[in-house]
Length: 485
RNA sequence: GGCGCUAUCGUCUAGGGGACUAGGACACGGCCCUCUCAAGGCUGGAACACGGGUUCGAAUCCCGUUAGCGCUACCA
Image (cartoon, rainbow, N blue to C red; front, side):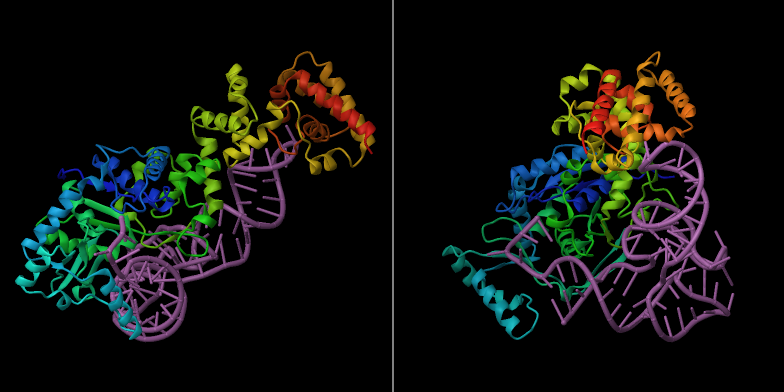
């Protein structure tokens, strides 16, 4: 087996918002391939559109990547810092004849476009519009007239073998002479991308398939600049439930939204990966190491996928249970504190207790938010009683409930110790002596001490809540049954 | 409109000419387990867009139709 030079890949977001799940997935694929092959994963912000780019957005994107566990190599490349080279490249294109100066103004262009529109004809820039004699050009230049630099698209066809789509080809007739340098001397996207990708020695350009139609232009640019072509891999889009692009308003399209909703980064990465790639076979839940082991470019999909929130949450439930407790613990405690269910001091005071609590709750939750909700009775002094649970477990027959709860409390009070080992026989004996199934005892007790219909096993609940507080809640429930109507 | 990409259950997918009575997962229903819930196990309904080819044989290959999506800026 030969040892090819390791690939260099990059993720190049434009910092005009938050990290979009589609972008995050593209980044993930680039990262996966770089890490798997011993290659390099670079980051570049495409901030040449100064009107829309912001530092906050840049920071948010970096944060999102870090949260997902995607680390990058070398220094981040800020495209805006390379405008001098972009400009020089554009001028080089003019010098070698592959581009030309165009003095057509924006206003004229708009008019031309409107005319074509009125005639219902497609507008494409006509090279003849920019046919000035050398004298005229010198004159305009001397007069300081603004101009753009346009690429002279050659005849023929432009094609490439896309890693995910196979051969794609475009008739150059379909490509207009596009602008590469604005009249203010700043580069247009396609030039900046190519110039930077060449400078960064990128060998695989992996990005969303909405860039397929930019690719022939970029290939032409590589060729005119005399640079070797990278390989291209166009991965499919991620759509919302309506089959269209994810909408920020409706779909929680930012990865930060999911972090906030209590999704684990490994679950997010796992889910996202499966939206544009599959390992083959029935494997779905994968830890990061497994994804790395199975990932391959050959199994990238061609079809756009719809973002299914329910499956994400299911996936998260899987990760919540399977990831090491040390990893989920801090995320849960942060959420507990943020929701004011507990203070940092309280949680730190008895780390073993906290860990046990989280461990008990995480297996039956799908999101961290659910863990927080379930944790309330164990951390708060004042608990809320779920009406439906109370109605079902206690109020159907108040007298009987009061009777059972009273006997239960007695058995608990007299138990030799407040441990699962001591409590369980006590309650099972009680059930037996009364000819009841254990559930008839456990269920009212659960509602009495937690206020909820859902909880871990009752003996974990009792020991987690503690003797004093359990007995007190029992007493209060008894009072309630006796007084309220 | 032009160009391009795509097309298997509601959704994510396996499948790469015969192993397909089309497999798995999410969601939904039923059953089991069980102190509740979750998890887990079993189970039910649910798909090859359509039409032509090629072939002894097509979900799989080719062409067309249709549909969806993307691009079509001195945005990225």
